[in-house]
Amino acid sequence: MYQIQENRPFSGSVENNAVGVYLLDGKYYALEDICPHAYALLSQGFIEDGSVECPLHGAVFDIKTGQCLGGPGERDLHCYRVRCVENHIQIRLTENTLA
Image 1 (cartoon, helix red, strand yellow):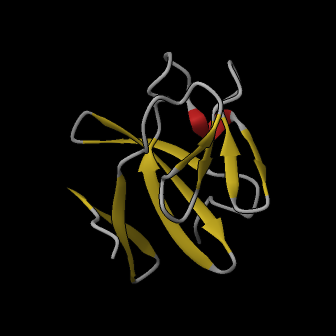
Image 2: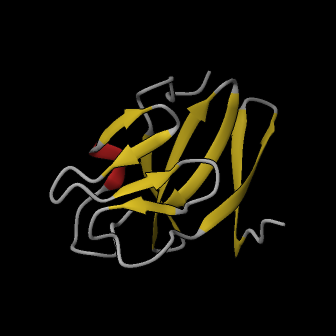
Image 3: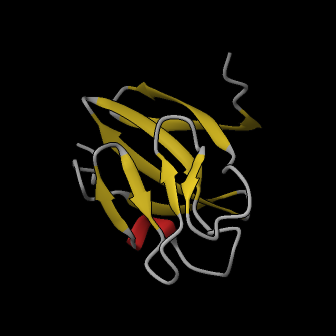
């Protein structure tokens, strides 16, 4: 089964792109994993109430949308489409456009 648990995201690389995969309310989400403010892996940050906080400077991002909620994040994160196929997580690297 997956190595991802609530409050314990997975950090990986897809085609040389750092991606963090999160499990939130039974659904998987994938975000770019490097904070746009300064190099830090967001998947090593603090997860609370559906958001992740950068472990270095405290920028906060919504896990479902990638929206920067506060701090020195400078911009929203790229979100990627995720699907589960036969116990494998597949990530589409084109940015997910949310309506």
